[in-house]
Length: 267
Image 1: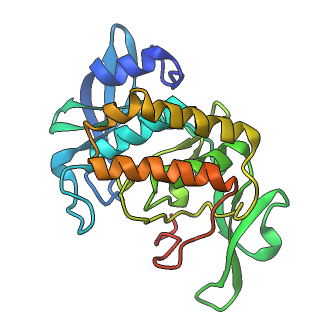
Image 2: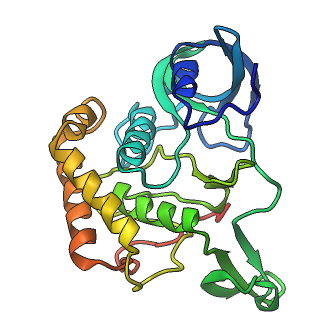
């Protein structure tokens, strides 16, 4: 039995794919129906997040019933490129019908994104924007400069993440940085909204470039066809184009001018 099954262990994928699900609770702050389940398989137990398709809130710019598949697609992309850490994620049947099932990640108390007074920003963090709070005091939106956070920033660009909030960047107790909640990703039109803008204009690290090249190869050799299960041909072409553009530029992109570049609320 394990409460903290290593997300990189192949047994974790088996657990979320075939384990018996038992409803345990609900995350009431989520915009879509988001449930916590116990999961058990062959003596291994843990927790998962379960988002039934039937509980997805309709959105004007994403087709109904597609959010679970976009979460799975983002996991596949992250896994194939070894870019960022997305917990094992599958589309399967559950207590309320078909839905996204993702391994629960145990986290530390210290966050990786914060809004704080300018003097309180840790020395090794990156500032994203400066503003004033309701009382007129200056505040800064900032995030950790850890390599795991940086890789999630790149993953956000690749998958065109429309809603990377601070609460979607998790400091795992295992020392890894995890990204979760990828239902509104992979739209064919530019919609990148993220709190992880701390590296704008800086060169992509060589290790990240290698991972992007690995992703680009995978998109031409199996991954692209697999993604057809969840994404349209236009969405897959846009994914390829974003990857090519990022590789050609070799730097972290700047926010677009045609949409709000930071999600609201921030957490």
